[in-house]
Length: 241
Image (cartoon, rainbow, N blue to C red; front, top):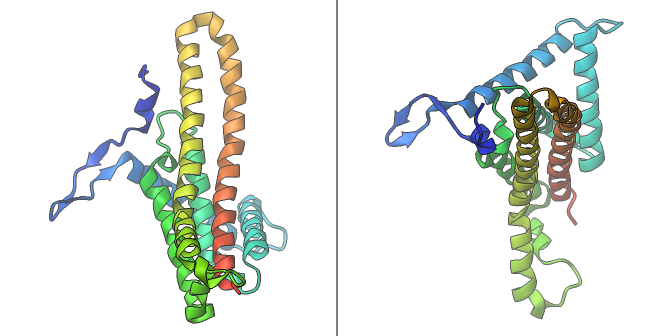
């Protein structure tokens, strides 16, 4: 067991791939992203392969998950939410599974990395821009200069609003990444105490059991927060006035 709790966040390259000087090697982060995608697809497949009147376990899990995300998207986006469901559902599934898989020993939490989480956040921002331009046209740019504000305030208000808008992906990313890092650092520290304490380690063992349950809740909560904020940003763009 490594004594350094930060080692669990190190990117390890399994298959080196270099194309034109660009490193696109297959890493432990890549592996667990693939696993998360496969698990998500399996859940969907189990839920739709047989549309039973009395749902089996797979169908029940899939329907409950989809219903929960649909309700979240409907409440956050409003009218026309259906067209954004594939993206919203994918975001929640990947973020939750990324958080959850990282709780297992010798696994890797790819949601503790800036790149994959930031990619989802930036993609959400890009989608919100496209949605705003498609629904509002160039009037969408009025978002950066609210109605009723004196014109002479434009040089101050517009840069502030633009900065606020562009900072949304950063805040989304850092919120999730820092929560995953802190939670996993705590689990690593308690695991180290169990490993080095012998019989006395029963106390930290009980503590880490409770911490794992808490982290399972956090894994779901952070995925939900990430998803609902992404939905809100899209909803704001779709129904901006």
